[in-house]
Amino acid sequence: MNCINVIKQRKSIRSFTNKVPDKALILECLDAASWAPNPTSQQPWQFIVLTGNSLNRISRTIKESFPAAPIQNAGPAAEKPEIIQKIENRKKENFSEMISFLKESGADMSLLAEGNFNFHGAPLAVLFATWPGKDQNNLKSVVSAMQTFMLAAAAKGLGTCWANAVSICQKAIKKELGLAEDMILVDGISVGYPDPEAAVNRVPRHRLPIDEVTLWFV
Ligand SMILES: Cc1cc2nc3c(=O)[nH]c(=O)nc-3n(C[C@H](O)[C@H](O)[C@H](O)COP(=O)(O)O)c2cc1C
Image (tube, rainbow, N blue to C red; front, side, top):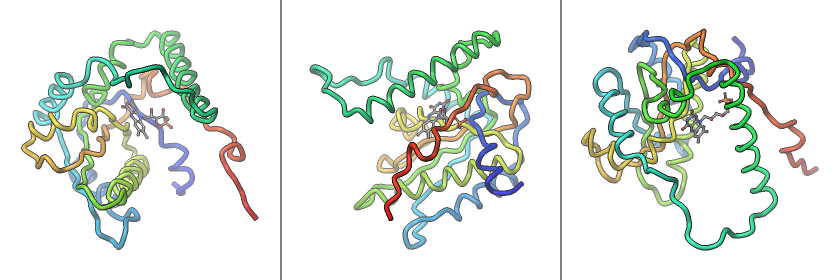
């Protein structure tokens, strides 16, 4: 598949078959990820693969440590710049479109909520970690490796989904895995073979017209 096709065909997969991807295949995708750009090839990352009992254990840890409600700032909501409001509105619109689509498709809605705790039932997950640096470059490098990993996985027929719960629950996860406290868990990625039947893997996807998000100075 050509590169642009892989980029556009990759989509978030939130329902997987039970088949566990081969170790060699995951290592191939991680090797591709390690070719992501990063400052002076410092490669400030650690990839942590979870399957089987370890994955179940960390899913339990996430469920038990996930905050009951989002952390809110005290005091009256500050007036937000228009662009921030627009971005937040897109979240609301896209989310409600997804919920309507899933309800119409008769999907089990409890699985969607549960999916944030259990890597959407994927048979494998990769946690992407780094360490504090004097600037944001370690973090940026890992995010670039995460995207490269997802594209490599898509090219190999694997489905992936970003898992934000990993950074949210990182303190508990690090304790459970015996990882150093100063390690930063940037986030996780669920990995497996897409369930071809699941409506949740066919939710509508949108991108803005490109000139709406581009400034071009000549
Ligand atoms: C920083 C970040 C955090 C995300 N967190 C989650 C998550 O916790 N759960 C989830 O199902 N999807 C998560 N996603 C995936 C987005 O919801 C998804 O990329 C978006 O809806 C666009 O859909 P697409 O990936 O199919 O193009 C996250 C993506 C990013 C970049």
